[in-house]
Image 1: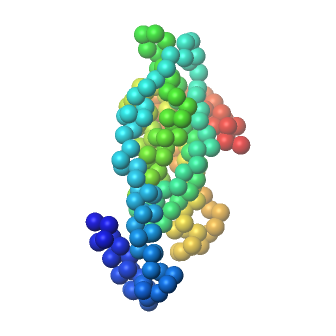
Image 2 (image 1 turned 180 degrees about the horizontal axis):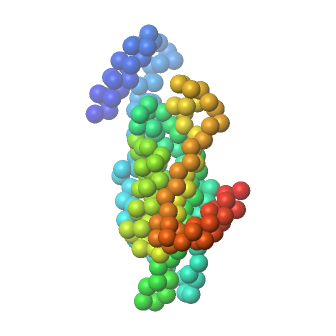
Length: 192
């Protein structure tokens, strides 16, 4: 598969009018294939396993926010990166021995698992929320993603600095406007 992919990159270079045999491009096909594998390695991540270990937080039953989670993803339409930050919040569920929370590093790992795929920002936002809802069974989930898309920056409309925002609210954060306002304010404060 690697050789076939490298030949594809060589063919693309030729179609662009380049000479893949020139010094600067000799190793480009292999580098491109390695980069694409790394940038789309999220399919191999087991999100259920990432979120499997939870801890008793005692009586803590308020919002937990992890913000400023940087990511790089690949737009499936142009195979160009989009980069940004995600904020993820949840209200822990109550188990038989107290409220259950997940380790702090697990939330960025989940974001990374979904970002490192050929992706749409809207779908990535929903996939993160789906994963937390399915594996943590929280009372509420909020995911907010903001990203700059290379397909808008370096081609087409060419608008550097234009960002896209997406959100997905579940449970309490969707049902109660005051809870939604509170979580969005907390995400905003944590993102500064």
